Image (cartoon, rainbow, N blue to C red; front, top):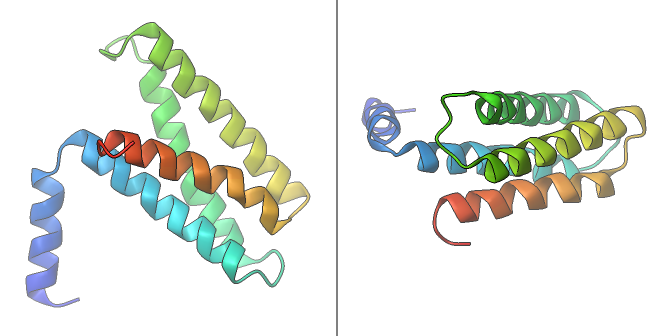
Length: 121
């Protein structure tokens, strides 16, 4: 990456709102999962890395939803936690019984939430 591109990337991250950063992270996870699904040759390193990134991202969302300092209404926090539990269950299911079709729900969830966070949903 060129110095100019690196500077732009740093600036865009530091000036982006938390919602935009969350949306970008969800889209990155969705892209990784979509790439695994599109180029499926069986379970492998790419699948494990994509699932790990998505799981870590959702762990952060779930932890934030549980925090007492979270300003969101309880109902929204509970919805995030419930979606997170579903994501974790789907991830484990995918790891135990790999099937590219199982990635669709994870991709859809991430894309839909990213669209909502970006104001496009």
